[in-house]
Length: 66
Image (cartoon, rainbow, N blue to C red; front, side):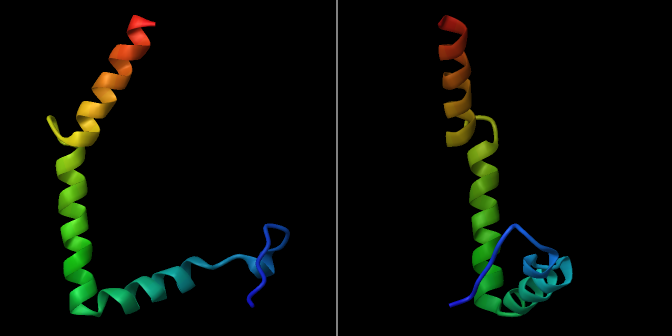
């Protein structure tokens, strides 16, 4: 089992390590295509009329009514 902690630099993941893993994953065509699809769906959700946009408007309306 790997140990991790917030207590020291030695346990932090470097930006270089994260970047390397992202590049490794994005080299896989299937992963890249899926990531693009997820990005498209997220953009639709936050666009005007999307599910996240609509939910946020409803939330704000409830706050104003309270």
